[in-house]
Amino acid sequence: MSDAAKSSAYLTSDFFRSAHFKMEALKQKEDSILHTRLEYIGQLSRREAQNYKLMHSLLSSAFSTSFSNIGDEYKPWPFDFGDGIDGQRELRKGKSWLAWYILAEGPDLFWQQWWMLPHDNPHTKNHIRDRAIEAFQETPGKLADHQRILARTLQKAVNEQASIESEWEESNPVRYFATYAKERLRRKDAGIPPTREILGHVPFRVNFRCPEEIVKRHEALFAERNTIRVAQPPRQ
Image 1 (cartoon, helix red, strand yellow):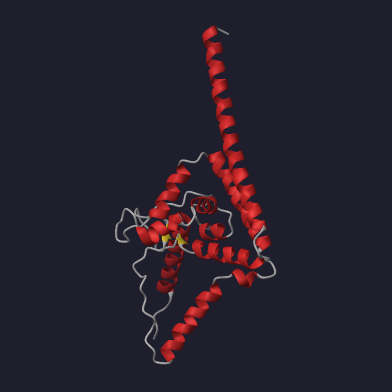
Image 2: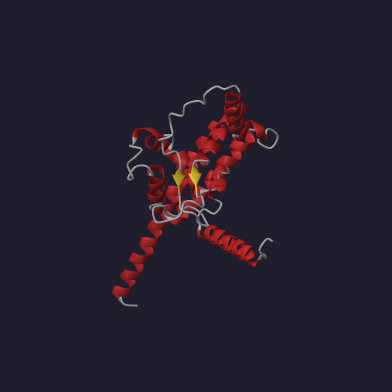
């Protein structure tokens, strides 16, 4: 091997060795942060852990890949396999990379979109979505995979601290929506005007494009229904 070839081989080896050490250092940093978080969770009371779980579930409900989210104005869900076909549920369960990102960013992410930034500005109304996508694209794939594992580990610890298996209802947000619906019905039956909504202008939703697979399923179902309707004999 010539001296030039040897030099090139050494440089290549040094590059990959340096990249490996850098990645391991980043992983160790995340592991250290997780350790601190797990210690904190271990000090929470059961009720506090249940409240955290409830808050996380409510936040996850803001993220949408609804069938109505079609078109170039909606960006695809890039964080996990399947283009977000089960994104919201994976986020709620702490299995999505997005679960790690939300915890890393903290409440400021939501405070900005829901309060500080102009709600009618197309460049800021999707602040959460755009920030998350940008951060994910800047994160090396191996590190993102590691962060996803850490998010699952953290969520498992929260579930155990909150006694989710035996007291699931305490962390279920559905009951609060049901209570709100009953209150609206009670006011209507009593002839009381409905509660005035004052936050209708707030862009609470974090909208991503509906996965292509879901769109195709809806299109196939629609075509099947049309075929059945056409094939039916006219009523006499």
